[in-house]
Length: 294
Figure 1 (cartoon, helix red, strand yellow):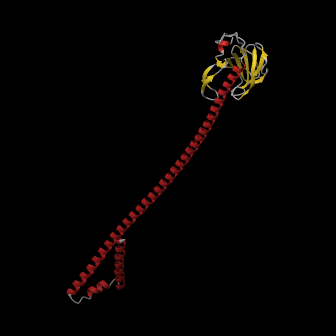
Figure 2 (cartoon, helix red, strand yellow):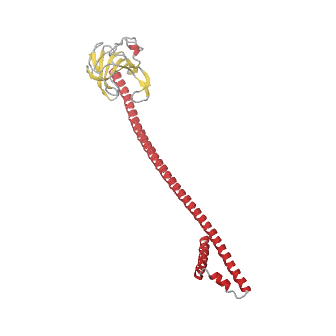
Figure 3 (cartoon, rainbow, N blue to C red):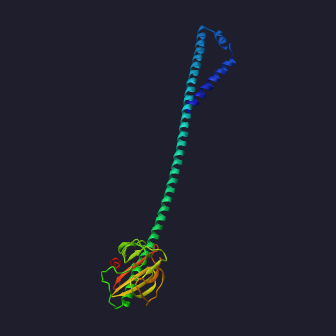
């Protein structure tokens, strides 16, 4: 600001002198010298004009310097303006990058929250299902106890030809091999470790189930866990149980012979596929059937 003011002032002064010299005309300098009244006056006028010329020269030089300073200031201002513009552009880019990063973070957070909500839903579903499975497992255990009571109450006092530890005299009740043995296992439906109270014999759906030996049918009915069930009492506290049946061929109280058809293979109750669940019970409690089977 100060440089421009000084430049304008010097330029105004110089222009004033130039206008005055122009008005005076090109002969004014000579006429002034020649009209000197004395030698001293001549010397004074000559010195005056020389000083005036020197002042004009100095003024022009100062004007040039001031112009150069002004141009330098303008260049500096332009450079500053470019620097400010570049900084502003960079700031805008940084703001855009920050906004984009925040948007990505918000999306990531929303996605994580969705995953958490989904996992919580799955967990609640699993817990609910686990609760239902535990209740069903307890029901299955109660059904086993119920069957034990039924067998004990209906047990015949007829002596048994079978030793309590087996003897390999029972027929195979269905055509097929054992797919799951007696003993503790991870239940295929409940996913818990529990006693498998019999053996599973893989057989086609609807294929025949026969009595392992002669005896009296003491129970025919449907249960939620065992599905359709037939129980045959063979005397002496020994009985056999057939479960997950698709149909019955006998009724409660009926006498059956060894190998007599009593039912058909199915998948009723807690079942993952057609098979016969076969149990041997001593005084109503389940034991390993293998020692009793031929």
